[in-house]
Image (tube, rainbow over all chains, first blue to last red; front, side, top):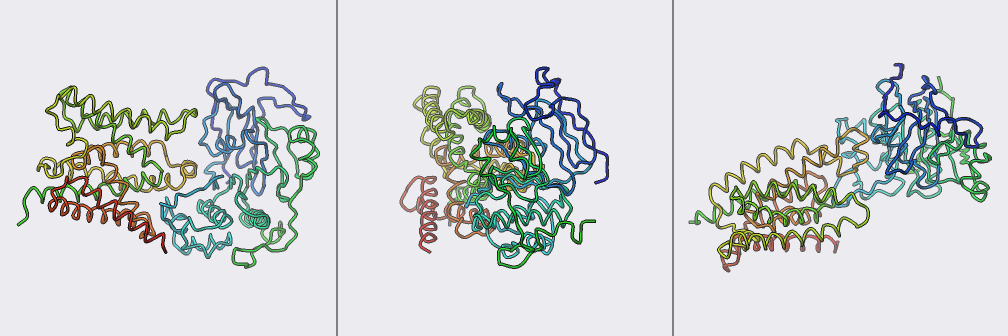
Amino acid sequence: MTGAPHAEANHHGHGPAPHHAYQACGCGHEHGPGKAFDTTALISARGLTLKRADRLILDHVDVDIHPREIVTLIGPNGSGKTSLVRALLGVQELTGGEISRVEDLKVGYVPQRFDIDRALPMTVVRFLSLGHTSPREHLRALLAEVGAERCLDQQLSELSGGELQRVLLARALTADPDLLVLDEPVRGVDYTGEADLYALIGALRDKRGIGVLLVSHDLHVVMAQSDRVLCLNRHICCSGVPDTVAQHPEYMRLFGPETARAFGVYRHHHDHAHGLDGSALPGSDSRGAGDAS
Amino acid sequence: MIEPFLLRALAAGVGLAVIAAPLGAILVWNRMAYFGETVAQASLVGVALGLLLNIDVTASVIVTTLAVASLLIVLGRQKLVPLDAILGLTHHGTLALGVIATAVIAGPSVDLMGYLFGDVFAVTSGDLWLIYGGGAVVLGVMAWLWQPLLRVAVHEELASAEGVPSRRVRAAFIVVLALTIAIAMKIVGVLLAIAFLIVPIVAARPFAATPEGLVLTAALVGAMSVALGLTLSANVDAPGGPSIVLCMAIIAGLSLAIFSRR
């Protein structure tokens, strides 16, 4: 991941519209054009703009995700979260803006919804090896890393919500990614399972030194290990560490004082997490310990 | 001694059962059974066009099928009415148009029942060439596209994010589907063509643990149904295509009933 970022132009002759150019939105900084890419980032996006049938979906959005950084993206429904994720994945055509990726950036992706048709029989191990050939032992090790080793030969359609999310994480890890993009990874998972999954994501970051972009629909709870929270409502309204973003006036304005008051941060003070079978996994609070070099 | 026409019917039916299995699986996994049904019934318009323009009916059926499939994909993108309602409209509209057009163009002499339900006992050795030659092309393309088709069926967005060109893969599949429908029409007619694709998959589902296992079991169920159906047909003098499809449906019903009791 040492290569220089290279720009991927998405301009189609649409420069930033003049009336957006230096428009302040009450967040204390300008959303002006022309900011340079962040060369230390795995992926650096500038001025991402998407218009669909005269509706502005994304309005000059800047995003940087660095190695070992967990960035949480929150925003109300229809705020453009999914479009932004698709743009960063390179599967969304944009009206304007540019994305620069580190050379040979490998991205692991966990989609938001995963409803496999029961008419399609498929074991977990087969799902993990779709599109590439990996030895079974390697796939077993990946499943062990996410605490779902016992699912290896189960049918996908028989998995619980939590098991499925772990298997999807393992699938994302088969690419040996530099960046993990997780779209609402705790969907369909109960409250304790949610805490465990967040702990697991933190542990993966620590162990593998990867960057993580985590999209959350839950405005009340943000993973404590997030280095930064981005609050999206077509444009980036505010950003900051989890503890401060909830105090931000833009956040209050966007989600209302009720939500802001209830804003909580996941604190996970265990020194270990649990696998599906109850086995202890590397801890979530071991940041910087051992493998932080 | 088995009559040659019976042997040809058996060869045609078994060939179609094998060709149909992988396509049927993709249709079922993508919840496109009704889409396939609509496209197949619209192929009667292709028959009428072929008769009108005095060109090869198989070719005009393939072209019409592709046109209707493209139209459905475009109509499916609008958000005002759900896709199944669009399919219901197209399904009946094109069937009515096909029946009327065929009758008006070809007059009372045309064997409308033959086009609707096929005539498996009238299969010629030329038809066998079409079934096995066309079938080899279909199976070849399906083998080549199998991994991407499977990944799109599992999760289209994930597949796209991982670099599978899902739109192109789907488009290629539709072309192969059109060719298969044109082949199936010879044997079971436009009304029953999709049954050959869908019903064996349903019958085989309880017995399969892998996607490929499902396809192979479905091919086996299809071939068995052909043998049973032709036997039934020869013994009670019933139409061939419907007899085969009836056997398939009974096997599928039994299979699901036994499975759901467990």
